[in-house]
Length: 79
Image (tube, rainbow, N blue to C red):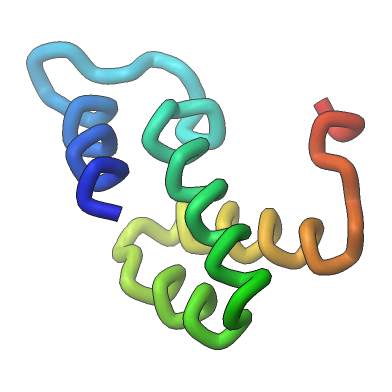
């Protein structure tokens, strides 16, 4: 999680921000993978981690990704 936080800082840095949509930021991809792995061990822990985010866009995105994973939706097919 610490490494993903550092990547998030780099993605949103004022001097060189990431220009892609937040859903495609490298840090968001890393957070998603961590959260999905955590959810397979403890869904409650994953939800608690999600609610630590202050960004409402990321909160919603991670909730959707967790729900999709739990429902067996292949996100690659959604692109």
